[in-house]
Image (cartoon, rainbow, N blue to C red; front, side):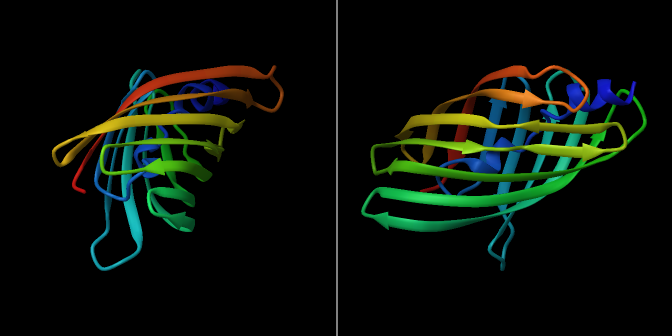
Length: 175
């Protein structure tokens, strides 16, 4: 049963921490819902996520660094982490999400491509994904509306490698 909750719950991933613009964000995805916002007075963002099948919830923090940028082109990396709690059986997992995105963030819209590894390790085992992500969208006044597609292999020790696919909608407020 321990493997079951980790497989179902690992996707309470705070995707909003990886939004292309460092502003409050909300994501609505096939597998999860997430919210993120800057923590005042710090360089950290805080986030919460819930799996859409109500199998798990996660709370975490993240930090992003801009490695390079000229005008609207940018290369960012980040690290998030937190605690994932399954809602279908007892247990807890620690999460870590290293990520990197590069692309265009402009006055009209955004397009970034990158990779993320939302790892979860807990009482029921581990889940080790590697996701390739594409995000793109347009500004509508102070609101950025984007589509996001993530796909990649997921390895759970002791089980076969699975393939993960997640389309989602990302909404950010503020320029």
